[in-house]
Image 1: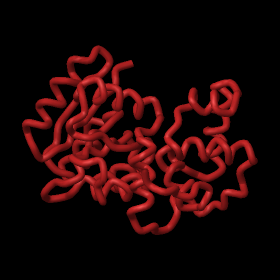
Image 2: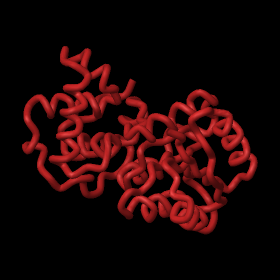
Image 3: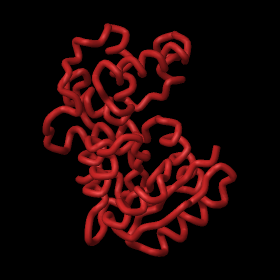
Image 4: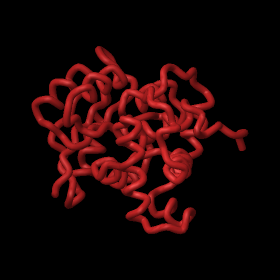
Length: 218
């Protein structure tokens, strides 16, 4: 199935470049572009993309405000925030708003296409080192979920800790010596019990609830 993508960035050259790279992929189609957050909201409603690449900093309405509004409706598309640096004070708030992760603007074509496929499949795009830095650096507001972590079984708590470290289902399966399908079932149960949208919110929840405590920097 073709993944429908909307590109949102105030720089026309960025939109054109990303569009050309993604349209060259056999399983990805760029269905539209927008130059600011307000245009993105309109385009998302009209075009119903599967994935939105959303710049963080834009005139008229920034990417964070646009993401909040777009992600507030049922059957919302997945949103990847585009950033220039790997530590951006908007990114953590975007994850809490429901974005599925972030991508650096200087990413390679393979990384760009891979990111679109990852979030379209329902996974999160989170590098462990950057996730830790985000959590350490920014003031914590209310948790992504108000449900206490004691609702989880001990094994689900183990899986949540490994998700928060940025491990994939395959890596978690190897770590716990279980089948990958078992990990998928645990992740699904975690999201359901904690009323979380996806793995990105699960990572935020794990740190905010104290299931994972940020360690020292390296």
